[in-house]
Picture 1 (spheres, rainbow, N blue to C red):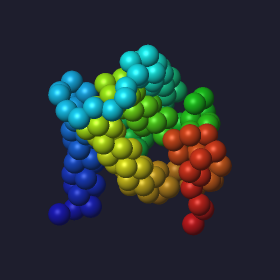
Picture 2 (picture 1 turned 180 degrees about the vertical axis):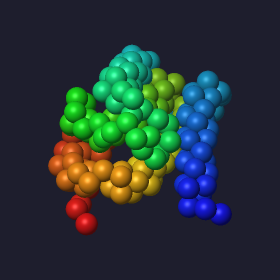
Picture 3 (picture 1 turned 180 degrees about the horizontal axis):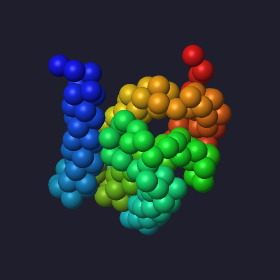
Picture 4 (picture 1 turned 90 degrees about the vertical axis):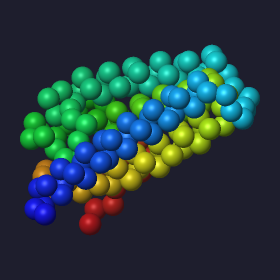
Length: 158
């Protein structure tokens, strides 16, 4: 199997898994299950902030927007919200997931949101390997920019 085919299959698998995990978060919020103390107001606020973050990061990513972990050749987005956070789209989706968990007050939604956080942490490691190989300045950018939150999770230069 060629490297490009293997890369494409890995990308498709990650995108598919991402969709399944988000579906699990959404469905567990709707289904009966063990409950926690929830807050519809706080949960709704987080979902709205996450949606705002998704649209903002999509706007700033522009033509470089792709669900695949490999760059699409449109260039590196390092301005706008990407000047503060390397993966604001993923951070926004994580905020939505935790908003659904808090709003629904469901234990399994919280567990699914934590799984989603871990998944995005792992997906970004794969993605950043491609970004380092594609864009010569990515390592320096990642060393000064937080992963999901400003200043938190800066990448060590290797």
